[in-house]
Image (cartoon, rainbow, N blue to C red; front, side, top):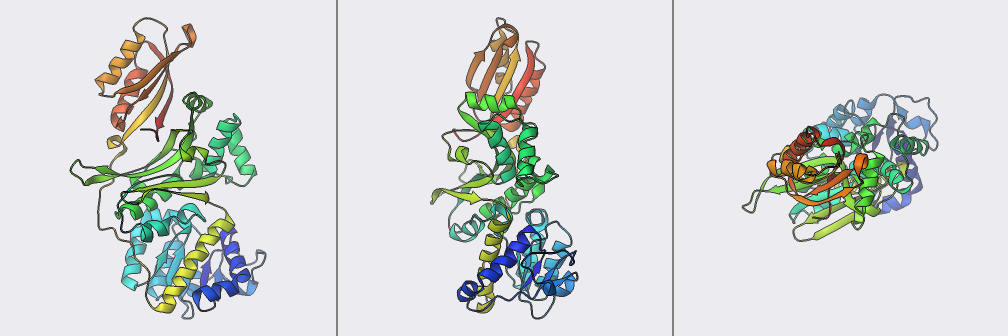
Length: 427
């Protein structure tokens, strides 16, 4: 086998290959031999890695005739895409942890795997050590998955957890996450939701057998989540989480008119199992027609957990290579359209600073009615300059809810729309 990349994850892959060589050989039926490791800086010291294995010529490595399997953990789009395609075209099976590549151009890789009769495994791309993709691809392939809902980014979960449990502000919680190694020096991919959106695209494609890319995912990060949002959630006995939500949208005739794939912060009740997912952990709910609700929980990132998922794929692929038959391929026969966020039905929590005078509630309610949005609950807090209305809606098209918020901003009796947050999990 060949390894592309030897950073945090790659180094752990090498360590586990060395430490568990005997067990892995017994499980595969043959030893797993590391033929070479492609890196950009071969002079850098890597603990436990034989320098003789290092090379800067990645293309030569992935096309070597003595290599059967290529493992890619370098990340990014290029050169990872070209290297994996070159590997498959020369008869290699591949394993990748590259969520960004799969979410942007997975179709090209899947087509190459079919054409070359090669394996393409990627369990490590979504939730680290959590066995999630293989159950979707294999265990639930005979079922009808309706919805996938979860926390798939440990950095944002840690930040929101600190804001909820310790009253930390966003910036303070982010700095702590960086100090602990949960967040990168540039945390944009995490806090703006790009990482979670890539994972949501992969989950939706597997769950619904339909092509989904990162461009199809509605994405909002957590940078706009305020202490007021967190406090408002507490008032509702809820907690704020960054959720990845993938769901079929029914057509009213027993079928599906499309899929909704979105990533955004939302309030969920503290009684919901996802509310108890603390610190940098991940958890995903899968709701299937026959199997019911299934929950997958564990460490979603980090060198060792991700390497564990890579080695799980490696054993499976090596067995397939020995048997001369590739594993199951991705099937996207459904061709369901990805629906725009405006067509998705959801719920809102809205906190308004209002004038404390007669008729305010009636005026606010009229704007909801004008946009055909039903109010589930409303309460007034404070008096005078501190008067506030808190409104929680029933489910409605997101476009109608957004339009309602915009009209409320223009209402003379509304001083400020202080907080807007989607609500999930209890209707």
